Length: 331
Image (cartoon, rainbow, N blue to C red; front, side, top):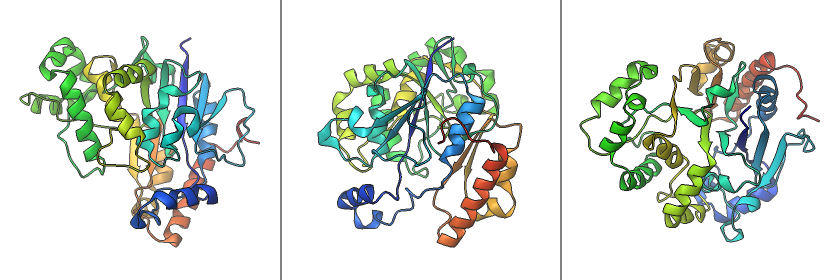
């Protein structure tokens, strides 16, 4: 059986020590950010790991140093990783997920094949190893996209593409990986690849906000080639327009053909708004057999405290209905 690890990044925005550090470096407009608010549902992700992906070898839980009170740190599959374990002290403290993700390969004991999880992604039914890795390569989709700034990460993507196009010829990459570029598993989305074929450079890729499989060796290779850029990202305590992000490593795997094409029809992304709670979208989506992974993304559309508390209660009720039993990761 292939050894596959999970890497999970988490921050407790209510930790007063973390908050003091954050406020020291944050700009005034960032200090009241909703970005770090706690939905108090992380334990359901660990229940999902145990229930739906029992084959995972190790879960590397990366934090500032704080831990959920319910987490059993003695669990044999759990490896608690502090930022100081993977990043030089001169870059700490850091509040930049781009910087942390760029250094994931430094996690002690990390397997060559691993999957990056965000804490807003939930598994809803059993998932085989082959959904993430097949023949020792990540499973992904190489669907082209035109660069857009509407996502809020457009500047990171542009930086990534500059690096990618420096090292790869799009036409050579397509020629070498024709069956992966024009693959029936992408469905109608393959038309994006056809439409953007006349452009001689990579203009972007569709970036599903879902668990992302990586090869550790991809990180090692890119650090050897782009150390200056990645060091600059690592030194950014807060997100900076000059950053690259974890998509760079994904794009490298796609352009080099180091992946196996899959359909992602089993995933669902929801940018949560009040409408999703009024029409019961959240509960219906988590119980929909069509999806095995659902991202409940807090994109700050829920502005008021009252609105947020109501939404949080509904999400917890829906997750508890799906995963009512405590996992062995919980005290």
